[in-house]
Length: 394
Image (cartoon, rainbow, N blue to C red; front, side):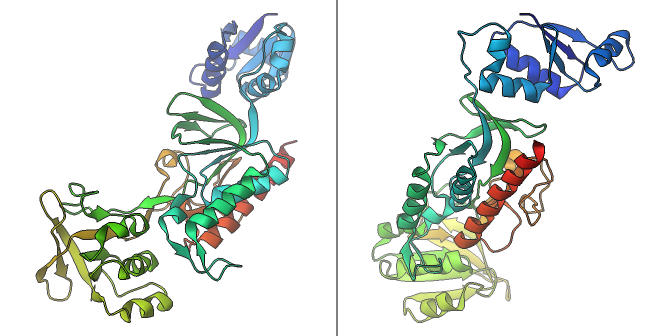
């Protein structure tokens, strides 16, 4: 059975459709049209539509790019082409969830319970919460080890048999149109009717001399991971929020002396501040800006400047823990979705991004309060919004 495709120069979906067919070694005849031309008029006569591409198998108009992907995913394309021995190698998912932290895993539970064919793609499982030791404010747990909480999340998702691709990075993504395309760095491509972005955030660097050079040589972004390496050592923690205070508390029973350096007065929870102030091991310097991390092959000290006096001071330390917040993992979406000055994806109260069928949740968005419980709730909202979107597409 012959396949004919009407296309137009500059039409992105026409290019997608042709690439899709070429990747599967499906021969086709192409007719390039321009609006108002004789060929375009004949196409409109046959289809009743002026949108492109328009695809015919024999005399049957099967629609455009989105319809082509759907036909291939269901196997109907090969039936129509008379190639009944072939099977689809491109499953079409109802939802592709990018990220497997609390937001992404929560979204997966809700999509699968709505009987949506779901795929999770993530470079790791757990996200930022795995960089924390204990979680004290998650409903139902007076205190829970972060790794145990992640394990519970993951176990819950596994009971539903959700498909997962873990340990892979997304290389390219196309969110326009009814069918979304996600391509991994290894070239493997997945298609979805909706995409839920839950890629979280990464640690914000100080961007001072010595930081990159001494990374893993005394400079760390994870007290949970690296605190045991600094037994009976003098260390500095940079930051004034909850993550910095938690890092200090991770180090209190390990390090000899801890210097807390913050650009502002401390902003973390009063509960944490009180524990830090009464530890007896911590010296606090507020309104001070780190200017350099010192050392040749290993960290030997940290230099900072007082914002009040302008004076430069140096402290001898063997380790520096940088805890100054997160950067959203949104770089691959910057040219496609609306973001704020921080790079956070802008969403409405239903986690919609402004692009049809694309939703975002958790630390990658502009929703305030980067907390596990908030991410879990936002993940549920994003999944339910994706489900409502699909219902309205039928």
